[in-house]
Length: 127
Image (cartoon, rainbow, N blue to C red):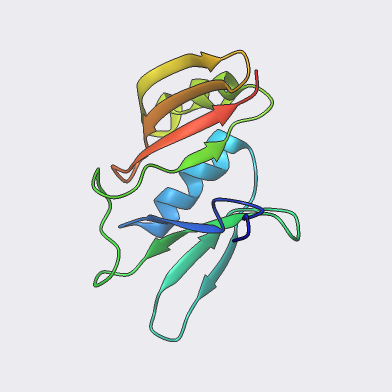
């Protein structure tokens, strides 16, 4: 039996309006997303990540992605302090559902929010 380098390899966050979702995430994380459209008209906005790290995308396709509370709870990287990201969320159309909460000294902090598309997501940071 072997171990995995990362428990998370890729994630996709549903969007019903890819432009609105892209603007929301660019604003709260203060980054720029890449964009692509696949042959089946799947629209994607790619989280900016370094080569060899875990990545993900916002995805819009009416037959495959439906925003909402059902499905896995994904924890996005809020380092160095998730409060910075959390403070931006209401300004850009999201809601804070669980404020910054300490998990433990060893495991840092978490928070849960609803994005502009109605998805429930979480943040994690060490401080």
